[in-house]
Length: 126
Image 1: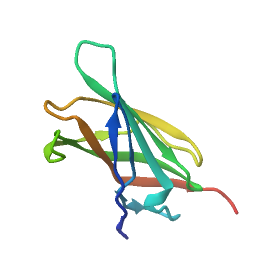
Image 2: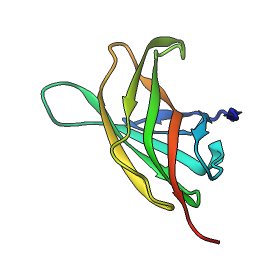
Image 3: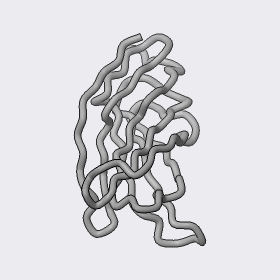
């Protein structure tokens, strides 16, 4: 098991934000580095409860499943106001994407979203 850490954060502007993958680890065959995941999010403008909705993109050559996200809410001063976990829906094929939805955090104006774990399902043949 190898931990890879690379951190980038892009602040929300006009209710739309993007956070790039900051860390990941995997189990199984195949190798996937942190740079091979990308996470985007935006505030959901409908529904009874404020929430954020996003996508996880897999640019690797392996199919992954059980993708777990750590979502850290940041206040106006860029300090953490809360942390929670969510699951991306289903498997993500090579070059594919999936989505997630989670309730917004009170006091958060920005989010740092990290893929913290995943399982490799299969690799593409070379």
